[in-house]
Length: 297
Image (cartoon, rainbow, N blue to C red; front, side, top):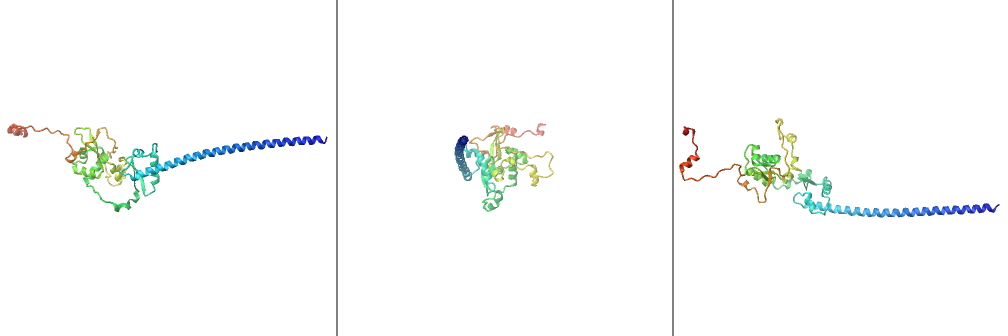
């Protein structure tokens, strides 16, 4: 009777040991599985980190390339010009936006002008460069009026400028504006005589700090600046300037078309007949001088 319970106790102890061994084994397997998964996850994270590191390194390198191109350029550059000099697939607009934000608080800013980009001194520091001005250009009143008409009414011909001003426009005035680089020859009007059309240039936008001609002051701005009389006609309005694209009634200048008629005045639309040679002085005189009312009687 005494030995039977002891054997039962030993049997129970063996069963408990087996259960503990199985539990320990399961825990070991779970730990090994978790360890393997952690190692795999770490490897994936390392690979992702390496890819991200390479991507960031390439982007930083490309960003420096864009910065160098803009800094060394003698004129504003557009996205297409930059893309041609950078690795294929470069996100040029994104890099330009990043550089613009980076330079915004600095002494040199990256600014868009006429769809192109350039580096320029921050506006609030312009006073530091006033002593560096080599030449001051002062335009005459007729030149200023002509420039304003071209800016707001472009594309515009010489005849249209004269109609708006109410006086003739001298060739010298247009020559001065062309020499400053603020206006340019856009094309030719598709009308008899094919007169030249004028418009503002990229230098005009740069000088006056405009991104495009559509940023020119409107009526309210001009009134606030005291440039317009407060008592204006109710139907008065400031025209909306056109863009750089040729209008429907314009045609592009040919490569060999330099607008040489500016030197002697633009060709007139009026066709002047050639004089007819004659040996009869009396006939020539009568043709040249029409009869008066008294002679007719």
